[in-house]
Image 1 (cartoon, rainbow, N blue to C red):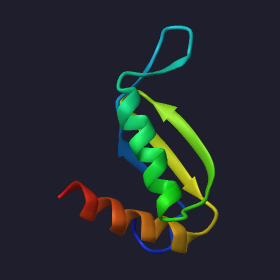
Image 2 (image 1 turned 60 degrees about the vertical axis):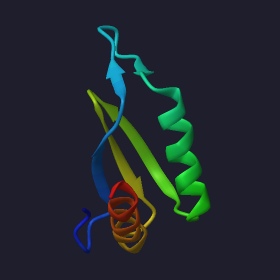
Image 3 (image 1 turned 135 degrees about the horizontal axis):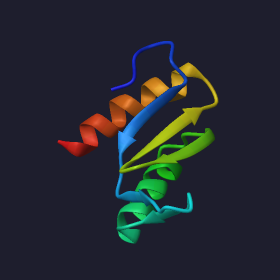
Image 4 (image 1 turned 45 degrees about the horizontal axis):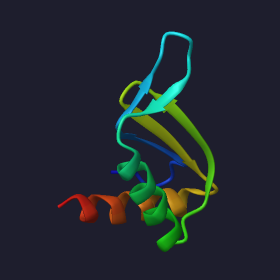
Length: 77
């Protein structure tokens, strides 16, 4: 979960980085569900970085990041 005051959070995601540094989503349905979740809750990203089996989300402010952390954690239960 995101700590208060931080603008970015790293979550696990079905994404893989190939040897030539290209991000490939291993589960396209998860990707669509995730971005629909962001859109539904009106959370605005300022950046998204792919990592091996994770994504780093940077939000426009710390409040958005904290709200995402709370909503995403309750979604996973």
